[in-house]
Amino acid sequence: MFQEFALRIFLVSSIQSILLGMFLFFIVVILRRNRTRLSYLLSSYFGLLSLGIVLEVIATAHRFSWSVFLYVAGVFLIYLSLGCFVLFTFYLVYGEKRKYGILYLSVYAFFSLILNMMPNGMQYSASTDWIPVWNFEFFFWSAILISLFVAGPELFLFFKLYKKTRHKIVKKKMGMLLIGISIQLVSMYLIGIYNAFPENAFFRAMWGVLTFILILLSGLMIYLGIGKNLE
View 1 (tube, helix red, strand yellow):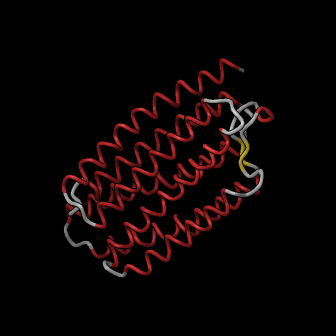
View 2: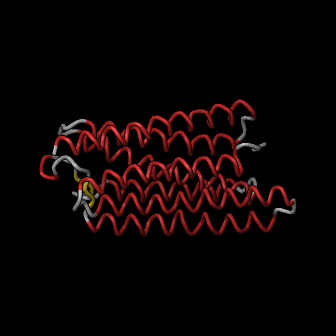
């Protein structure tokens, strides 16, 4: 059991270091180029996602009763980062209609907070062999939340943005953005699946590393698709 735990921490920490370094680079480049609402929102996406992952890794690396609170906070920040990205895309499409975007983010953050406070929704203790476990009810409502507030709006806004784009080169970059969005959404569902079905610890470790790699690729495609040339 200790060897499996150590392997999981080593693999996840290695991938996490690369991911955090890359996301920090994106944030610095985006904010140095131009400080607008769009650049702050995209930087918030990368920043909150990074912080959420850091809290999750710290939580899973320490076997203390309070570690579950760090883990829950990490999940909430990751969910909140997705809301920032949806809001970023919303402003790209609709411009200055600020009140609707803020209303969306407020409602989404509220439901995310309620979900993460679900009693025994996420467990991390000696009773779970110090492996984060989501109960099926939490997994189900998490999938519903992501589908309604993230996946649906993101894909709708992307195709609205794609239709507005006339330049061929920009349309090619939109293709990278779509790949990034698709990988991002798949990653969120995979995170729920491997936390809700913890039968095989080694498989979970490999699956966890794969999820980190997918998040890294998603961030790279989003940056190359829209963040690199954001004005």
